[in-house]
Image (cartoon, rainbow, N blue to C red):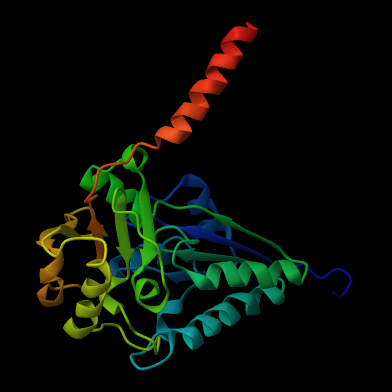
Length: 269
């Protein structure tokens, strides 16, 4: 770096899910004080809101295109974010929800920035998962909660636990191997149903969920059954939630071991 030249920096922040409600004071400060702001958010109204916070706000959504690989789109986003940082600018990249959840570009941009000697970090935001717990009244600490990206359940051999909640993300593009589509159809969801039917009955309840992005909206909460998923309306932003189908099984061998430890400790007192 040339003497006297300012070294650029990068911070990736989350704006939350709902317009105006979830942005933290610290994230807002980074947006307002950055030299350049990049945004990838969920609604055009949210985009307009962000443009009022900084005179140089650039939209990353322009890199998306139907039929174009999302892998290529994400690499272009990363390069766009890094370019002004390398020129000595303080860059803030604002993403909807949490910037580290289902978002490859923030992680990759921070990794590269740090490898090149720039200060780079991430500030968390309220994610769709956080909204899901609140809107559906689920406490993941009661029986546990497992999360999977929908296509991973098809591409890989995963072991599900039917005694815990199951949350399936990006169900609207389940089975897309091209990374170039914004939706897949009923035939792909039928394969997902067949995979889930290994562990759940086909009449098991399923919730189709989508967090609200505007304060005037309600979250989308639709109750259906596993076997009806192929015919259901499921879009890119929708998430599937399956409640437990089995009770928790007590591990009596482990409980006996723990009881023996308790007894030994009690005798030492």
